[in-house]
Image (cartoon, rainbow, N blue to C red; front, side, top):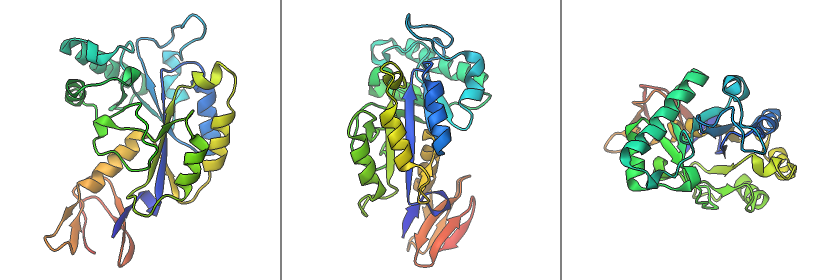
Length: 266
């Protein structure tokens, strides 16, 4: 028996882009044109502002611009969380959630650590204010799902062996349960040099694959957590799904969907 992604997909692909600068607009267009989904980590305190050279996206465009994708936290002012007093870490994360939820009309529970910096205390505070996952910048070059979602290491930055790793992901090792490719970066890394070639080529390579689930960070977090919360009989011949999410499995009986609240023999 092994787990599958929704609708029996064999693997999943997700993206994560930080800071919310104006170049997100073109990146979203590329994702939408190729049927890809991503998560955009925003600093609510900088929205509508200017770096001196380029603009940040505006608050009133957030809901429409990122429709079909996920908006998540990056801290109100992009502060280095481990250097702050505990109370300021709480404010930086909780206030970002509140502001982004007002702008999107959705529950916001994702995070990426500003500068990639975090600590055990920061993780604990993030969890306490309702964050369910947070991305680091520590690339694994691998396709295993994270052990700890509050310390979610991506596969790679888009500037490091992206196409090579993409080729490997299309035929991942059989021992990897729920293969996942997670690409992260900043859209200004394409926009400032006016070179969108690598992400456009990667989108072309990855789009339209019937065995890939194209999902946001939160969708993947929720799904994998659901697989980990399944309950088995002592002899493992029955499984119960206590979650609100259907889980797909490849069993001796073929592929099955275990619906919320359902128990099945396997």
